Length: 391
Image (cartoon, rainbow, N blue to C red; front, side, top):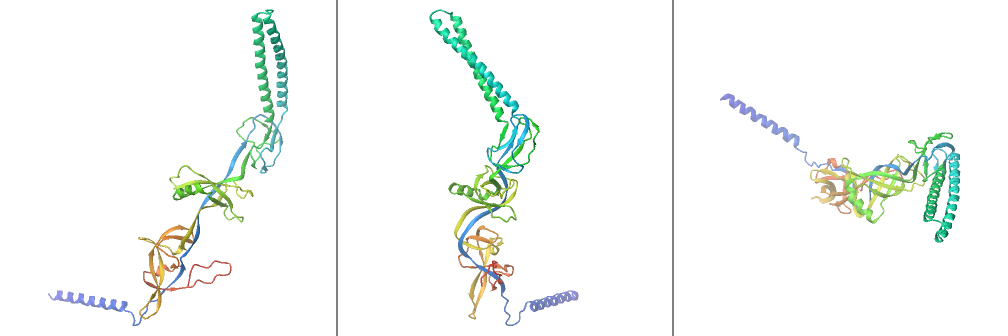
């Protein structure tokens, strides 16, 4: 019994000691005033913002042609330098034309011979036609004359086709550029004997004026892009990373017929005039698709938006009058619905009004109702953008 009393007394003493410690550590001095949390703020503004999609694309030639010979023979002339720009119809190669010239002359001679024979047969047929009426020749002789004339007419037509084929083969000895573009490496040289339709091309021409750029965008933009393309041409800008020249301007020309399910993207293509040849086939480029202009939008700095279990929110600073008649600034939490966003700015679809002050830095020290001290941003050197904020 005594032992139990001792335990009870010890427990009561321990509880009293803990209570005293709690009161000591949580008591505040008389007249204590909590420190206001320093924050930077910015004013929600109403304005226009251009909605853009940024991604990475790849440059493709508008068309690619592998130049091959349709006839075999010796390369006698090359009219261009590797990597040079050639216009459509410009001469590229000459294949020794002498064998094909001989075939043309042979075909002409055969045609002339058979044409003369045909003329004789036609004259005989006219004579037999007049004699058959006078019964001076038999029907069999007349029909034989008709058959001879018809056969020779077919032979002449065959000779004409053979001559046209020989002339075409002779034309193939002069290889010309089928498109305007930039040539690649020359894979044959003067004096080489080449085969017709060989596997290896003589040279490849890449058409880069104009040029295409392919790029993926998230599928969530697909319906809006399709709707916009029906009414306007969507502008696209492209520029190689870290380049110094201005971006090339083009227009969206193609939407793929299926979404890439593993990546959740849709492939698009744009056409660029590329007059200065700043875009090169195979090159990766930064792409900007200008989708729409959002008018009269509520815009705030992107860093003002925070995330919670209830969704996106911002801290809004509001003036509050205290019982002592002093005006202080207090941060209150507001749930918002963000829309289009960039690295620097975000459109607020719902939850904010123009002119409201939102906290852009210092949110970590805030809870709803916390008094804040609005700091002014550090002055920036001339020509640099000031940090978002408003005193």
